[in-house]
Image 1 (cartoon, helix red, strand yellow):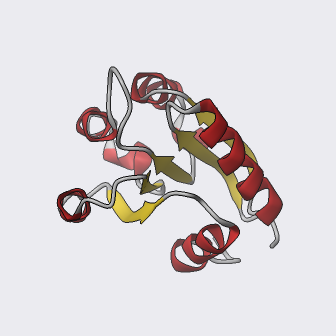
Image 2 (image 1 turned 135 degrees about the horizontal axis):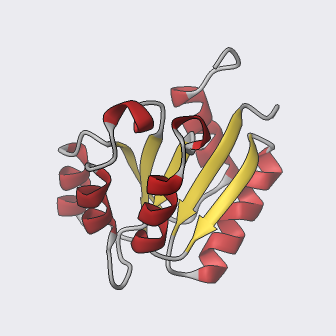
Length: 136
């Protein structure tokens, strides 16, 4: 796959999971950069400091993290100006198969989808096909 995206961000407190997910994304060659952060707090600070043109194209967000979980991150993410994050796609990527989590995700405007770990090349390819095109 040709690199289409400038940046994908992985938000997960589990370092090995971030490492493996980064490897999967790198194998698909769909992004120039993959940024990994280990907490919602770290991700929020990074995003707040970015100019609009350097915002990630795609974020994979875990739910279950200490200090600030994925839901709390999304509450805080609302404070980032809409025009700054308008081109960012946020996908929940979690071990949770709880139907309540899936329903909750559907009700949050900033979430484009919910998927269960592990991340795979097929999942990345499907997300790329659904949300990004060669002309983007």
